[in-house]
Amino acid sequence: MKKDDAHTRRLATCVNFNGIQHDECGAGIAYASVREKPGVMPCLPPFRKGEVCKTTCEKFRAHTPEEIVEQDHVTDDLLAEFFLDIKAGRCTVCHQPATREQVGQCVYGRPCGHRMYQGKA
Image (cartoon, rainbow, N blue to C red; front, side, top):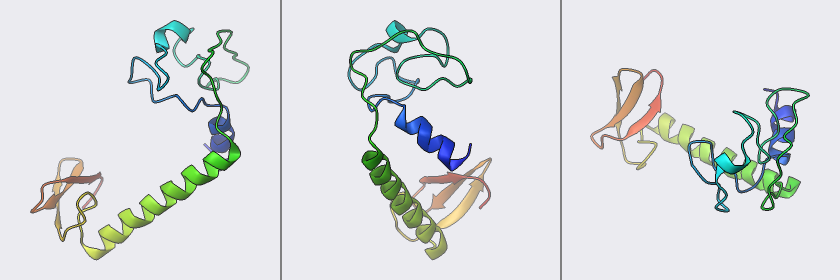
């Protein structure tokens, strides 16, 4: 997905949306009560072009452009910290000195034991 497309999607996503792994959104609305079919609900823009959700939700509030800029700054800062920890030989969770150990698809910090990331050590 292009950055502009992702930005547009986020502008059309409700601030209360907390992921489909939850039964309710952050405002307490049950997703099952507003979901028309998988991927079609008023808190998210449709995944397929031309598809429109006919259901509405009284708790819907879109992100403002300013909120998205702030979220992007927070994400950029967290990613910068993550990569600095990797480069400096620190755990990405507790920020203590750590060696990396590959276990399957995951990389763990030793001696702390935190799962740092998925990929190659």
